[in-house]
Amino acid sequence: MCNLFVLRDTTRHTILTVARNVFAHRGADNTTMDDLAKASGLGRRTIYTYFKSREELYLEVINREIDIILKQLNRVAGMKISPEKKIVRFMFNHMKTIENLSRKDRLLRIEFLNRSEKIENFRKVIDIHEKECLASVLQEGTQSGVFLVDDYENTAALTHTTLKGLEQQFILDNFGKNCRETLELWQKILFRGIKASA
Image (cartoon, rainbow, N blue to C red; front, side):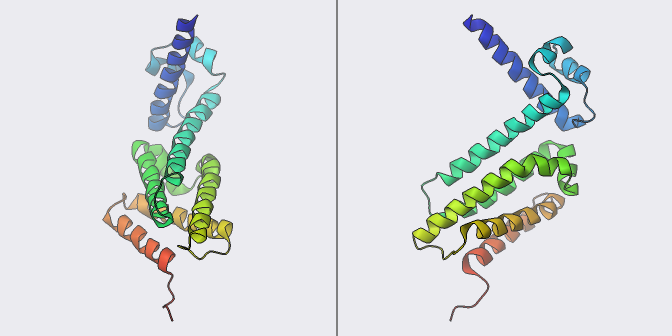
């Protein structure tokens, strides 16, 4: 009986891995269950045993991507480093995630550049979690005397919106040297403010 569960898990994993690659190259709308069956070496019936539709399979692939991203966020939030370093690490992780997604998936890159509804729906869960992580780090930093923030949620939302606003240009610039310099400049503005100290 145990071997049957292992086989089911292995088959499900195979389907999801193949689907991720096929969706990345062809796009979800241009992929059929026949394409997935051919690419996986499995029959359509086998795929339908695990997933009722292409849409359900696509949603599961997206959910796996979201889980990976959320685990990375939680890892950064749980690090035993200063709140400043957490925010820096968070910003670079955020952009690295966008870079990785847009590089391995040319259709996803186009979706990001066009800010499509599909991408925004995919990102809602991640956006909420990112803002919560940022608010938590801002609170931690304020309580330890590193930051001076009155409204954690709004400051986190503003910081997150600014970070998202940089993505499109970074993708167009292929995440080159200018992108890193821009992020570093934004960090200085965020941490030091733009007002000269009295």
